[in-house]
Image 1 (spheres, one colour):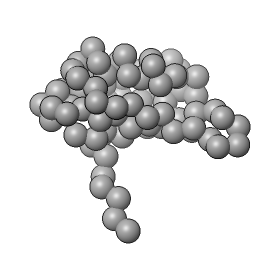
Image 2 (cartoon, one colour):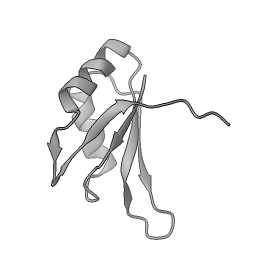
Image 3 (cartoon, rainbow, N blue to C red):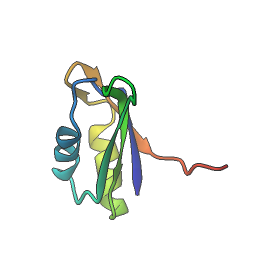
Image 4 (cartoon, helix red, strand yellow):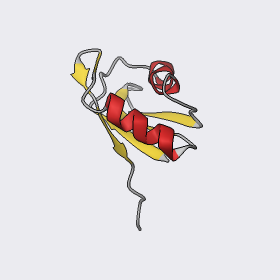
Length: 82
């Protein structure tokens, strides 16, 4: 299941984000979205967890959790439709 993590502290690294979710289950991939020009975090990212049960636990435990200076929001990522 692909999760969208929003409202991340701009100083949060991809490794920190991955570690946060790995404490709750298997992480297949972690992608922190970066600004192409400045190279800084845009404040959101995606985590892919192969087991939907673990992903649902991660949503419950981490949604509205304060990480750094921000309260993050975690939800199932919507599929893009073109």
